[in-house]
Image 1 (cartoon, one colour):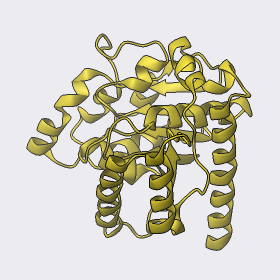
Image 2 (cartoon, one colour):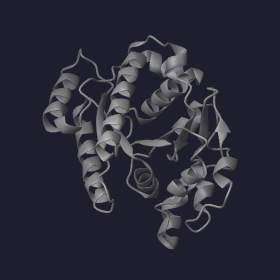
Image 3 (cartoon, helix red, strand yellow):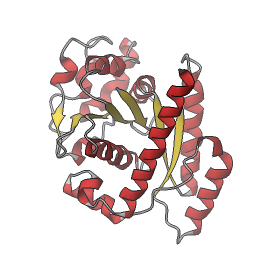
Length: 264
């Protein structure tokens, strides 16, 4: 099982679209993929046609057992999606109360890792959609993953969110045996605007060691896919957005192979 998290401490940068697009491309290849929605807003859950306001069982249930995960609970919470090779560990609005509960109880940082351990032989890939704030959910995502993808909208305000995210990573890495590798992915790029062009130049200058050098363009087909509730590659396999995400996936897979070879 390979576990990737998609996170940024700023909303509206394309986290859910990135997680769903990558999951869809992996699933199209026949890989068994689990997508995990850790955002109380439940964008990924809604994407696949489930209502986070009405769900009575969700990822929130994992956190109701004093930091432990009872046998079989993770599997019992899974839902089907519109892709036969993707299953969903959904969010619900109850997840918004997690910070208050964790402050009272503590010991919640490895709950998701323990849940995924129960599903280790059931999936080849896990894609985690993290909320846009530092808290228990994001800490769980960072603790559970082996690769972090940071989508960054190509506009100036997004650079501050990226700076906060990198500072958070520095903090998290001090408690890990090995540093968490991350890839910055420029998103919502519009070559017609000076803001996009300038921001992309700044990203490439300041974060070159962690940058995917290409970008995800603005593409209405990605939005249309979310309205239809299907992964972008099933909606329009040759759209500009899907072609860009396909190139990103090739890059991430190559990076994973390189790291495994270095460890070996």
